[in-house]
Image 1 (tube, rainbow, N blue to C red):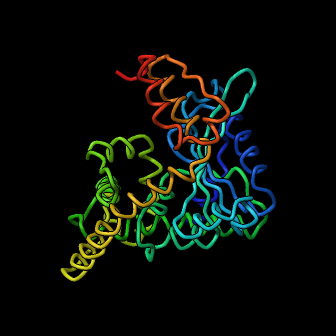
Image 2: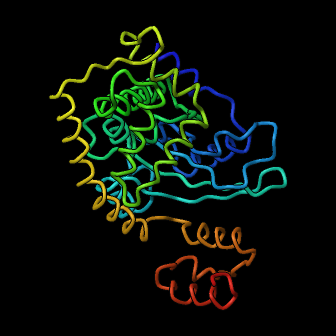
Length: 307
């Protein structure tokens, strides 16, 4: 069953540094945290290796924003245009580990992983591998499990009519990924969809076959039997999401300039990682990154961090 496969995936063992970051993130926001989810490329890190060098990716699901933030502005912004994004870094066994995490409410998470969502960002993300590093209670764990299952169903069912039947799981997943990329501000190349699928092909194949279990032919292909009406509905569905997606991405990017706490540290870490140049930052500049942006950019340029 799909639910059993989702439960097994959510309970996978991850690198200990990821668990430590999850605990630090949860501690920042208190008892209102219902769940902490870990996803992204760092999820593939072997637990026996050194911690990932990159920035690990998390989602925080909370009951109420006013309990999660001390700032009313942060709570309001997260309610109106989710998610708010934060950056955190800390020492772990002689290493510095880093993460960025997004915050959504329970209602936003459940709605965003369903086919009714206006934009595919949540269900596209959580149809891919994810681990739950914290679930406050049975209610929270059940909520996450069901939402992840819905995300996977939505990802495949909304795009399946656009793929010639019978189709392989690979065909279905790559088409679904391509459709979600087209609804973003900067669409990824078609090769990106192939890369994501091949990174965990057995997992993607299993999920597709569980969803279309009654439509498998003797070759293991999926006969989804889309009618002309099904194809038309799917095309209209994705056309609407493309029309909404790009303006929504611009709004979220603009909002992040004001709400991405720790964003300047993240940006300067990226500069150092790619150029080897460390850019000093005063406490005033850290508190007011937008006001000091021209000065910071000039300093980066002067230190030859950007050429």
